Length: 154
Image (cartoon, rainbow, N blue to C red; front, top):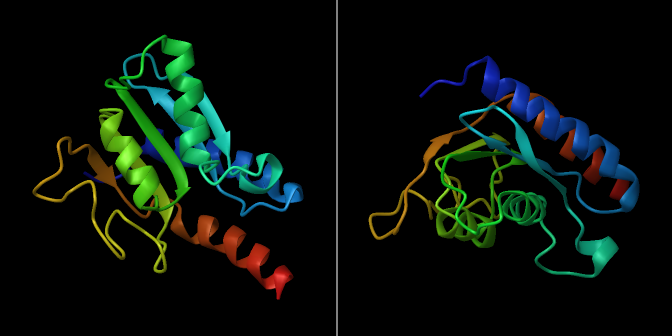
């Protein structure tokens, strides 16, 4: 499926979160969980590994936890996750476990991406749940934000 205006808007919201989070010292990644029927954002997240000293503090996990609390259930069927960077293996596994209907992401992660770059956890034949994946949405903007962050570290 090609990205539409909705998917570009979701990535835009995730980019805003990532920009706001730049000051924390974490890699600037933002994520939103959207209830597909209503279009309502029910979860927001940014990377919080450094702030919380939590190895699972990825933007996707933070957003999914908030969405699950909002819905009062762990299953996030009927929802989409939009994130500025291709999910890693941990996050891709969590997306599948949560039974999400759709994943939309921006920049590809050639080092640790698990939705097409290094691995393809969500579309693997053995996957228990295979959400629709829409990749590369606003990828240049997402990649530029990350590139700027890492350039400053060097």
